[in-house]
Image (cartoon, rainbow over all chains, first blue to last red; front, top):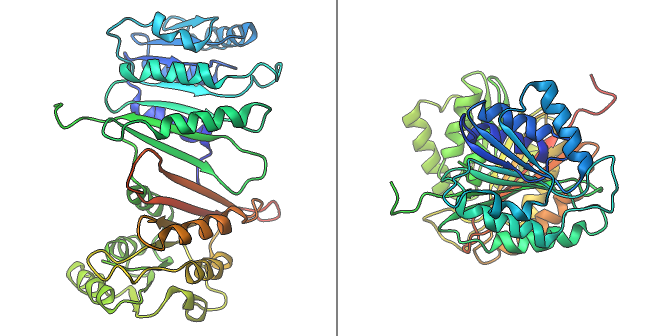
Length: 193
Length: 193
């Protein structure tokens, strides 16, 4: 069965995130990706989760408590554009995931924004480990969503093909703007072993 | 590693084509997909391969001979738009693959055409088994390629979402028009068991 963008994002994370990794959940939302990442990195790894909504941080904290995964997760009630200040200068991350749009079940006017999304991606790219992914699940059906989608597609389609592969994955015959996926992989350069 | 469109097409075929299936190689070309399909369907299955170029049919015949896979393959030196005349009225296919564009190493002016490509897809859709795929690997860098690509995207994006999932998969930051993939899956409808 052809996987939805969300299921494909989980598949990609499972393929590349390893035990002990540091990874980023740029939009913890209801916490389901945070739980997946915390499971994948294990007790010696580290998930750093961001969200600007207190409700998202609280929901995720509850979910982690119930799953016994709090130890390896740091939840930050702040925007993902602050990620550069949070990570060590020489940090290497094993992956990052963004779920763009609004928090399901909350105020639909609070949405991710093109400037902060792109700023966070730009800050994460130099820290991404070779072979790992920055994944964005892009919802564009809400007010403001199309603008973020277009700005993001323009940004990622200009990433240097010598250093990055940028994949777009999504269903194209659905009327209600289903989410699609962008995955950025850091490539091995010819001079690296 | 994020798979290329060609590698992803092979992965999808391996996931869905079963022993004993009837499948279609709409553009046998150099025969590599034909060999893969013949292996997947086994000696009790049937691969029907089309190509309008004699050289493609000959190359593929050689490759099948060397692999000992001739028994389950029928090669037809004719266009894939004739597929409706070739298949039984009640035939059910376990998959189909198209590699659009020109035959590598041959005359680049002989290319697949939007009318015949769409006509073949339209003829195959009603015969596709639930859960199986029609896959198109789309090259658009050659003269005439962009026209076929646009017509095809328009056609598949209008397929009814109650019956079909249409996936687009491809790299978007490469300057030389790399091939991308379209996969059409026939869905189970609510009234089917």
